Image (cartoon, rainbow, N blue to C red):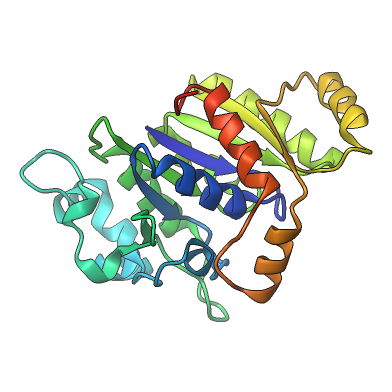
Length: 255
Protein backbone atom coordinates (compact mmCIF):
# COMPACT_ATOMS: atom_id res chain seq x y z
CA UNK A 1 0.00 0.00 0.00
CA UNK A 2 1.21 3.49 -0.84
CA UNK A 3 -0.01 6.27 1.47
CA UNK A 4 0.62 9.97 0.87
CA UNK A 5 0.71 12.14 3.99
CA UNK A 6 -0.12 15.74 3.22
CA UNK A 7 -1.55 18.96 4.65
CA UNK A 8 -0.79 22.56 5.57
CA UNK A 9 2.73 23.56 6.56
CA UNK A 10 3.36 22.98 10.27
CA UNK A 11 0.42 20.63 10.73
CA UNK A 12 2.69 17.74 11.72
CA UNK A 13 3.06 15.67 8.55
CA UNK A 14 6.62 14.55 9.29
CA UNK A 15 5.77 13.68 12.89
CA UNK A 16 2.78 11.60 11.80
CA UNK A 17 4.92 9.94 9.14
CA UNK A 18 7.56 8.89 11.65
CA UNK A 19 5.11 7.67 14.30
CA UNK A 20 3.08 5.75 11.71
CA UNK A 21 6.24 4.18 10.27
CA UNK A 22 7.42 3.01 13.69
CA UNK A 23 4.09 1.40 14.53
CA UNK A 24 3.67 -0.24 11.12
CA UNK A 25 7.25 -1.58 11.20
CA UNK A 26 6.09 -4.16 13.76
CA UNK A 27 3.83 -5.75 11.14
CA UNK A 28 5.16 -4.61 7.75
CA UNK A 29 8.28 -3.71 5.85
CA UNK A 30 7.99 0.07 5.75
CA UNK A 31 9.54 2.60 3.38
CA UNK A 32 9.42 6.36 3.94
CA UNK A 33 9.74 8.69 0.95
CA UNK A 34 10.91 12.20 1.78
CA UNK A 35 9.20 14.38 -0.82
CA UNK A 36 9.65 17.66 1.06
CA UNK A 37 12.30 19.58 -0.87
CA UNK A 38 12.94 21.99 2.03
CA UNK A 39 12.83 19.93 5.24
CA UNK A 40 16.17 18.40 6.22
CA UNK A 41 15.48 16.81 9.61
CA UNK A 42 13.23 13.87 8.70
CA UNK A 43 16.12 11.35 8.77
CA UNK A 44 17.17 12.58 12.21
CA UNK A 45 13.58 12.33 13.47
CA UNK A 46 13.43 8.78 12.17
CA UNK A 47 16.79 7.91 13.71
CA UNK A 48 18.50 7.12 10.40
CA UNK A 49 21.34 8.51 8.35
CA UNK A 50 20.53 10.90 5.49
CA UNK A 51 20.53 8.94 2.22
CA UNK A 52 21.82 10.52 -0.98
CA UNK A 53 18.92 12.10 -2.93
CA UNK A 54 17.53 9.75 -5.56
CA UNK A 55 17.54 12.57 -8.12
CA UNK A 56 21.36 12.48 -8.05
CA UNK A 57 21.32 8.78 -8.99
CA UNK A 58 19.52 9.81 -12.19
CA UNK A 59 21.87 12.63 -13.12
CA UNK A 60 20.43 15.57 -11.18
CA UNK A 61 17.28 17.70 -11.35
CA UNK A 62 18.19 19.22 -14.70
CA UNK A 63 18.23 15.79 -16.29
CA UNK A 64 14.90 14.40 -15.09
CA UNK A 65 12.54 15.78 -17.74
CA UNK A 66 15.02 14.97 -20.50
CA UNK A 67 15.12 11.33 -19.43
CA UNK A 68 11.33 10.96 -19.17
CA UNK A 69 9.28 8.30 -17.44
CA UNK A 70 10.30 5.31 -19.57
CA UNK A 71 14.02 5.93 -19.17
CA UNK A 72 13.69 6.56 -15.42
CA UNK A 73 11.85 3.28 -14.96
CA UNK A 74 14.51 1.45 -16.98
CA UNK A 75 17.22 2.96 -14.79
CA UNK A 76 15.50 1.92 -11.55
CA UNK A 77 13.68 -1.32 -12.46
CA UNK A 78 15.08 -4.83 -12.33
CA UNK A 79 14.01 -7.85 -14.42
CA UNK A 80 10.91 -6.02 -15.76
CA UNK A 81 9.13 -6.41 -12.41
CA UNK A 82 8.82 -2.70 -11.85
CA UNK A 83 10.90 -0.58 -9.50
CA UNK A 84 12.08 -2.40 -6.39
CA UNK A 85 13.42 -0.16 -3.63
CA UNK A 86 15.66 -2.86 -2.23
CA UNK A 87 17.59 -2.78 -5.52
CA UNK A 88 18.77 0.78 -4.95
CA UNK A 89 22.47 1.26 -4.05
CA UNK A 90 23.00 1.35 -0.29
CA UNK A 91 23.91 5.03 -0.16
CA UNK A 92 20.53 5.98 -1.68
CA UNK A 93 18.52 4.25 1.03
CA UNK A 94 18.98 4.39 4.80
CA UNK A 95 17.52 2.46 7.69
CA UNK A 96 16.18 3.36 11.16
CA UNK A 97 16.65 1.30 14.33
CA UNK A 98 13.22 -0.25 13.61
CA UNK A 99 14.41 -1.18 10.07
CA UNK A 100 12.24 1.48 8.45
CA UNK A 101 13.86 2.25 5.09
CA UNK A 102 14.10 5.84 3.90
CA UNK A 103 14.45 7.34 0.41
CA UNK A 104 14.95 11.06 -0.23
CA UNK A 105 13.71 12.30 -3.61
CA UNK A 106 15.73 15.55 -3.67
CA UNK A 107 16.29 18.94 -2.06
CA UNK A 108 16.46 22.57 -3.12
CA UNK A 109 19.26 24.42 -1.33
CA UNK A 110 20.68 27.20 -3.50
CA UNK A 111 19.51 30.58 -4.78
CA UNK A 112 18.02 30.42 -8.31
CA UNK A 113 18.25 26.62 -8.28
CA UNK A 114 14.79 26.31 -9.80
CA UNK A 115 11.44 24.82 -8.82
CA UNK A 116 10.46 21.43 -7.41
CA UNK A 117 8.74 20.28 -10.62
CA UNK A 118 11.42 17.70 -11.58
CA UNK A 119 11.32 16.26 -8.05
CA UNK A 120 7.54 15.88 -8.21
CA UNK A 121 7.82 14.24 -11.63
CA UNK A 122 10.38 11.78 -10.29
CA UNK A 123 8.19 10.99 -7.28
CA UNK A 124 5.15 10.48 -9.53
CA UNK A 125 7.11 8.15 -11.82
CA UNK A 126 8.52 6.22 -8.88
CA UNK A 127 5.15 5.71 -7.17
CA UNK A 128 3.35 4.72 -10.39
CA UNK A 129 5.91 2.06 -11.26
CA UNK A 130 6.81 0.83 -7.79
CA UNK A 131 6.42 -2.90 -7.16
CA UNK A 132 5.48 -3.80 -3.58
CA UNK A 133 5.05 -7.14 -1.88
CA UNK A 134 1.91 -7.68 0.21
CA UNK A 135 3.81 -7.03 3.45
CA UNK A 136 5.29 -3.70 2.28
CA UNK A 137 3.93 -0.18 2.88
CA UNK A 138 5.23 3.14 1.54
CA UNK A 139 4.59 6.39 3.42
CA UNK A 140 5.21 9.58 1.42
CA UNK A 141 5.95 12.69 3.50
CA UNK A 142 4.98 15.50 1.12
CA UNK A 143 5.84 19.17 1.01
CA UNK A 144 3.43 21.73 2.47
CA UNK A 145 0.18 22.53 0.69
CA UNK A 146 -1.01 20.82 -2.49
CA UNK A 147 1.50 21.60 -5.24
CA UNK A 148 2.25 17.87 -5.39
CA UNK A 149 -1.43 17.33 -6.23
CA UNK A 150 -1.17 19.87 -9.05
CA UNK A 151 1.77 17.81 -10.35
CA UNK A 152 -0.31 14.57 -10.25
CA UNK A 153 1.98 12.86 -7.73
CA UNK A 154 -1.11 11.30 -6.07
CA UNK A 155 -1.75 9.29 -9.23
CA UNK A 156 0.56 6.57 -7.98
CA UNK A 157 -0.77 6.28 -4.43
CA UNK A 158 -3.57 4.20 -2.91
CA UNK A 159 -4.62 6.48 -0.05
CA UNK A 160 -4.22 10.10 1.04
CA UNK A 161 -3.82 10.77 4.75
CA UNK A 162 -4.34 14.46 5.40
CA UNK A 163 -2.96 15.96 8.60
CA UNK A 164 -4.72 19.08 9.88
CA UNK A 165 -3.95 21.24 12.88
CA UNK A 166 -6.78 22.98 14.78
CA UNK A 167 -7.10 25.97 12.43
CA UNK A 168 -9.76 26.99 9.92
CA UNK A 169 -7.09 27.26 7.21
CA UNK A 170 -5.91 23.70 7.78
CA UNK A 171 -9.42 22.23 7.82
CA UNK A 172 -10.37 24.14 4.68
CA UNK A 173 -7.33 22.75 2.88
CA UNK A 174 -8.30 19.25 4.09
CA UNK A 175 -11.71 19.69 2.45
CA UNK A 176 -10.06 20.65 -0.84
CA UNK A 177 -7.80 17.60 -0.67
CA UNK A 178 -10.79 15.35 0.08
CA UNK A 179 -12.65 16.70 -2.96
CA UNK A 180 -9.65 16.00 -5.21
CA UNK A 181 -9.14 12.54 -3.69
CA UNK A 182 -12.75 11.68 -4.52
CA UNK A 183 -12.22 12.76 -8.15
CA UNK A 184 -9.16 10.51 -8.34
CA UNK A 185 -10.92 7.58 -6.70
CA UNK A 186 -8.37 7.52 -3.88
CA UNK A 187 -9.03 6.61 -0.25
CA UNK A 188 -9.14 9.77 1.89
CA UNK A 189 -8.42 9.88 5.61
CA UNK A 190 -8.27 12.95 7.86
CA UNK A 191 -6.38 13.08 11.13
CA UNK A 192 -6.39 16.20 13.29
CA UNK A 193 -3.18 16.85 15.18
CA UNK A 194 -2.23 18.90 18.27
CA UNK A 195 -5.53 18.43 20.08
CA UNK A 196 -6.19 19.76 23.60
CA UNK A 197 -9.28 19.10 25.76
CA UNK A 198 -10.40 22.74 25.58
CA UNK A 199 -10.76 22.77 21.80
CA UNK A 200 -11.98 19.23 21.07
CA UNK A 201 -15.72 19.99 21.06
CA UNK A 202 -15.33 23.20 19.03
CA UNK A 203 -13.10 21.37 16.57
CA UNK A 204 -15.61 18.58 16.00
CA UNK A 205 -18.32 21.15 15.26
CA UNK A 206 -16.06 23.05 12.82
CA UNK A 207 -15.05 19.84 11.03
CA UNK A 208 -18.69 18.76 10.76
CA UNK A 209 -19.63 22.15 9.29
CA UNK A 210 -17.06 21.52 6.56
CA UNK A 211 -18.35 17.99 5.94
CA UNK A 212 -15.21 16.41 7.39
CA UNK A 213 -15.00 13.29 9.53
CA UNK A 214 -11.66 12.63 11.23
CA UNK A 215 -10.40 9.06 11.62
CA UNK A 216 -8.10 10.16 14.42
CA UNK A 217 -7.46 12.93 16.93
CA UNK A 218 -3.84 13.23 18.03
CA UNK A 219 -3.17 14.92 21.34
CA UNK A 220 -0.55 17.58 22.00
CA UNK A 221 2.55 15.74 23.17
CA UNK A 222 5.32 17.56 25.08
CA UNK A 223 7.85 14.85 24.18
CA UNK A 224 7.36 15.61 20.51
CA UNK A 225 7.82 19.35 20.99
CA UNK A 226 11.00 18.85 23.00
CA UNK A 227 12.66 16.37 20.64
CA UNK A 228 11.73 18.49 17.58
CA UNK A 229 13.14 21.61 19.24
CA UNK A 230 16.39 19.81 20.04
CA UNK A 231 16.61 18.29 16.55
CA UNK A 232 16.79 14.80 18.01
CA UNK A 233 15.28 11.43 17.18
CA UNK A 234 11.53 11.81 17.62
CA UNK A 235 10.05 10.81 20.98
CA UNK A 236 6.35 10.61 21.79
CA UNK A 237 3.96 9.36 24.46
CA UNK A 238 0.29 10.33 24.08
CA UNK A 239 0.60 10.92 20.34
CA UNK A 240 2.03 7.43 19.77
CA UNK A 241 -0.96 5.90 21.56
CA UNK A 242 -3.36 7.98 19.46
CA UNK A 243 -1.71 7.10 16.15
CA UNK A 244 -1.76 3.41 17.01
CA UNK A 245 -5.48 3.66 17.85
CA UNK A 246 -6.09 5.35 14.51
CA UNK A 247 -4.28 2.62 12.57
CA UNK A 248 -6.30 -0.04 14.39
CA UNK A 249 -9.53 1.82 13.58
CA UNK A 250 -8.54 1.84 9.91
CA UNK A 251 -7.79 -1.89 10.00
CA UNK A 252 -4.18 -1.41 8.89
CA UNK A 253 -2.92 -3.15 12.03
CA UNK A 254 -4.72 -5.68 14.21
CA UNK A 255 -6.74 -4.80 17.29
